Amino acid sequence: MPARIARWREIIDDTRALYRREEGRELALFRPRHFSEKMQWRKLFDLNPDFAIFSDKHATRRFVAERLGAGYLPELLWFGRDPDQIPFDSLPTPFVLKSTHGYGHVEIVEAGAEPDTARMRASARQWLAYNHGTTMGEPGYEHLQPGLIVERLLFHDSGEPPPERKIFVFNGKARVIETILVASGNRDRTTGFHTPDWTRLPWRSSREPHPGNLPRPKRLIEMLAAAERLAAGLDHLRVDIYDCGQTFRIGELTVYSWSGLPHFQPDRADEIIGDYWRIPFPMLRAIMTVLFRRHEIRPRMQKPPQRAPAMVEPASEIS
Image (cartoon, rainbow, N blue to C red; front, side, top):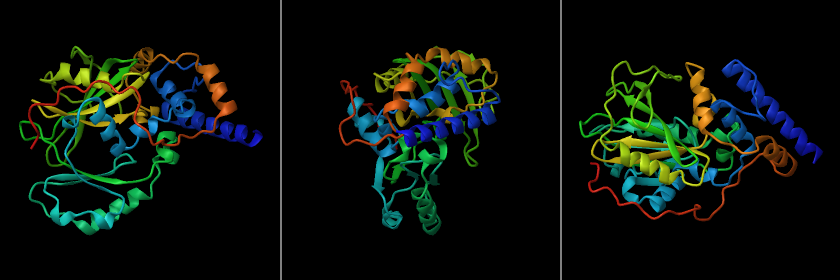
């Protein structure tokens, strides 16, 4: 136990130092109030084994299929763990290659383009050697078996890249939506925040805010319902959705948004989102975790909890 407690102290001190450096203030870890503080608390003390499901893009697909239906997922073209086995010769373009266990590991091949297979296999090997859990202190990722997936690239009805709707759900209720717009060609990204009734919020995070108005999504009510169904039973989950216009697809489920370092402007946004997130007895739970647990999450091989009745699948497929 002394060695384990010493390790906990080291991890907590590192987290405090990171937060101080990134957010410019001391971390109120045991009485967290801001969203960023509560996320640091989660990274340290909420060792829910189901977080490993949401941290694994391939396992997430199964979770979404069971709660909503497979029709809410992008088409899976290939899954594996060996870059040399990626069947580039037979993959229909356009497609996207991703890692299952990391962040920002994306290679896109546009329609009719010839993939640079040597470069993409080299990138995939680098991804497989990366551990997001140890890099960012996010235990849901630490013990995942690294993998690779290829999905068909999605488009909006207009032919443009689909807006990404990131829906923040707290205790079963959608509270905030971040929209990321992806420009064609250079794929530059701008953002906008809204309430569920589509009122624009004067917030920004690390990305540039979109300068113009953002039209209300056609399927907003259905997207909110899907997000709340996926997040049922959790105090917080972010549900990332590709909005394709007449239909939508679930991209990822995120438990460690921005690793809890959102760099919000104004600062008040951090407090507002934090108010939505209720963490009962944070100090007591932290103490019990330090006394009786190691700072780790081991994936478990069983069905995800609280399976809900499947929603009706979308009537049309995305081509």
